[in-house]
Image (cartoon, rainbow, N blue to C red):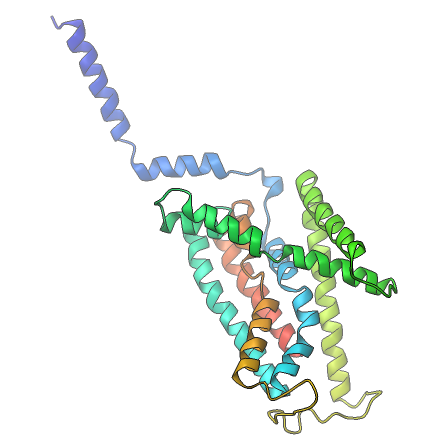
Amino acid sequence: MSSPLKHDHHVGEERHVARDDISTEEVGVVKQQETYAYDESRKIGVTGAVFLILNKMIGTGIFSTPSGIFQSTGSVGVALMLWVIGGILTFCGLSVFLEFGLAIPRSGGEKNYLERAYKHPKYLATCVLAAQMILLGFSSGNSLAFGRYVLFASGSTSPDGWAARGIGIAGATFAVGIHAVTPKWGIRLFNVLGVFKVIVLLFIVFSGFAALAGRRLVPDPHNFDNAFRIEEGEGYGNGGVYGYATALLRIIYSYKGWENANYVVGELKNPRKTLAVAAPIAIGGVTILYVLAN
């Protein structure tokens, strides 16, 4: 007859063996399913993911930088080539983020990737990324630009100051509020705004085609007679290497936002499939629109 102590010891061993039968990978899968499962009503499909990226990419950059890019380069052909190079660089960044996003299908973007790469000291990568996003983020600049454009459209003669800041703060607060309270309507609003932005760019593109066809109200500028001719004038052209580098940085800023879907991978339907399809479609479409619009 075995003693109670020995019996308890064997029970403990049996429980220990039962725990060992569950692999670390299986435990991780269970934890991931429990932690990152979302209500189906909040899942974003391919269309929503495409517009999520479009809305982030198409913004103040494409509507405010083209003149500055021509000013830096002084050449229509060079400016168009830089826009193509910007699209290629964006696809290079996308290839990296697709690998990360498909391997780590969790919301958070760079936060998850940096935490996985730099585990020690703990929270170092998180704190550095948070400081960069807060101190160097451009959402505040976009909000201020939104306020200025609203004042411009209203006919204001002084589109700066606290009026522009107030409109920007109101716009940012509204965006946060609608996604916090009614995510469905937030996604619908995003889709509508995405369609509107694409329509505006298409209007610019077709206006350019009409001008090339001879439907102009101004004299023919002969931009494509010798597209790579360097034009110099007061305040534009002859920028040299510095001018080209500045123009390329402005173009990269205009493409900013291509990684937006990686921040909400946890809310995508079939994250791996949706991200792999939506991101190339959105970035490819934006690249074509940017080149044609210029």
